Every structure is written in C-alpha cells, then in structure tokens.
Amino acid sequence: MSEKDTEELENELAETDDLKKFFAENELNLRNFTLAQYLSYLLVTKNLSKAEVIKRSELGDYAYHIFSGRKNTSREKIISLALAMQLSFEECQHLLYYAGAKQLYARDSWDDVIIYALKNNLTVTQTNELLIDFDESPLLGNVE
Image (tube, rainbow, N blue to C red; front, side):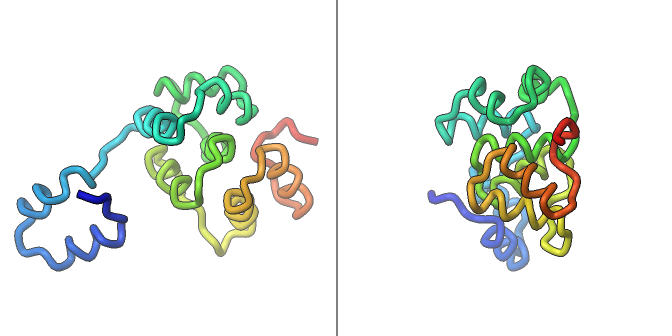
C-alpha cells in the first residue's frame, strides 16, 4: 500500500459512510506521534545524525531535551530543528503540528521568511540574517 497524502485522506473521509472501514483501510497512513517520536522518525527516514542536527540547529544541549520529549518548546526552536534537518515545507508543517505549535502561514511576513528558508535549504544562521534584514525577530534571541 502506498502512502497517501493528507488531501487524499481528507477526500476519502469526506466520502466514507463507514468510519470503521476507513480506519481499517488507512491504518498505516494514520499517525499519532508525539514530538519526540516524530523527530526520531525523521532522523531515521532522512538518515540523519541527532548530534549533527543539534549542532546545525544552534540550540546546544537544550535540543537533546526536545528530542527526548522532556521539554515542550517554542515554535522558533522547532523551526530551528526543521532547518537543521533540511525539512521540506510540508515536513516542517507536520513537525509544528506534532509540537502543538501554530503552522506556518503565508500571510505572515515572519512566516514568509521561514517558508522561503525552508524551500531554499537555508541554515539557521542564514535564516536569522534574512529575518533581521527584513526587520523581523530572529529565530534565536542571541543574534545581533
């Protein structure tokens, strides 16, 4: 069975008259991850090292607490991890969802810079510089 995207699932759900059958047919497509589980899933599927992602995220040891599930964290820190993992826009949206954070919204100028950074594989540092260039607050508060 191939993986279905969210739109396909939404269409099937809208057309079904048997919810039990929908769940049975889509068991492998439905995911109920915690943030820590989704981060682990991304590491495996993208063949990434946790240590390298944490280094690129510029979050230091704090990121280990996010990966372990011991810390609920800010949207900005989640986005730093997404950039460090070079996630697609869609993958970042999923990561924000599992973190319980607001998803990126194209009518928000700060979010627009982040969307651009994701689509162009910018680093956290490059993204912070771009945010500052557009008079937006950086991802990490310690940037001058």
